[in-house]
Amino acid sequence: MKLIRTLYLLMATLLLTASCNDTDSSSVILYNDAAITSFSLGTVNRYVNGTKTTLKGTDYKFYIDHQNHSIYNPDSLPVGCDAAHLLCTVTALNNGQILYWTEDTDDVLTHYSATDSIDFSKKRMFRVYASSGSGYTDYEVKVNVHQQDGEVFVWKTAAYTAPTIVWKSSKEQYRLSAANKLEVSQDGGVTWAQDLADDAEDAAKLPTQHVSLVSYPMWLSEKTDYVLLAGTSTAVSGKAAIWKKEVDYYDKDKKPSGKWVYLDQDDTNFQLPALTNLSLIWYDKIIFAFGGDFKKIYESRDNGITWKVTKRLTMPADFDYTSTSVKVTTDADNYVWIYCTDKNKAWKGRLNRLGWKNQ
Image 1: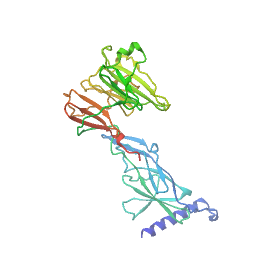
Image 2: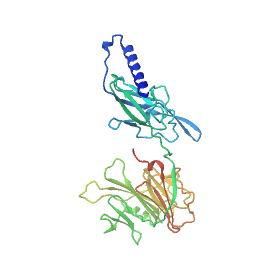
Image 3: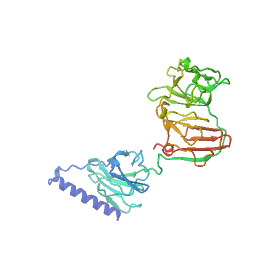
Image 4: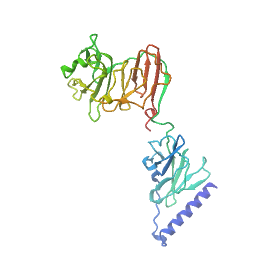
């Protein structure tokens, strides 16, 4: 029954198309190829906390995999998008006729129309017939929608293990000596040498307590790391002592080069305070600073020059503010870890979108 209905619909459509194109049927050209050549969405409704907004569906490109006969959007629609009521624009090779499954079963095929809403909350099958009627090609269509808000940061308690914090860039390791002098190793920690400041007059401002260091690749600079060092210094009052170092390791036959330069925080409105238990991390391409009473977390988006209280991260709801020894670090899975080493407690968390896999 299904086949009879489908063939009847197809032949009626083909005859109608031919008669509309030209009264002389000998001028109608029919093709044997059947393929979908483009797929896009119209306006998408999104509902978040009871508020409706709209998105341009064309901003989310769909990939047509002709080999595996599938169509999907690699960049998922945001959470809250209504996938059950979507308009789509589909084109076929040589004006082939397009139909699709409207139910979970394939008992009924519906002729595609750009003005009819389709429920894409589940996978759909689209079929395109060659204009000659000689055959067809099926495609599985999936509209991906995120099930999480990518900008939400979620904490959870974790099993405690003693953290190992190593200060390093791609080619160097750093430490404070017993005499509170900054040292560097370029051979994996086998040998160490004093790491001197670029300006001898500023050398006294090198931090000696509550010190932390973070390193990350410099933007648009191949094989160069940006290293930021901060902490408290007796020569700096009321704010953190912050130093930077650009480590260039482009020439593999030479030792990495770069010297420390003091960053003077002149703008009192955007300074990083002198924080006890300071921890610096580079996360989501932003530097974050934890410390002090941990009621505020600071961020810098300009490589440590200016700082402000962040709204992107907050401490875990059950964080132990009585802890006197806290360490913060990150891992390769984009988790931020907080350790209360005097309480044997730990938390880990991450931005939802940093846990999503690239499809």
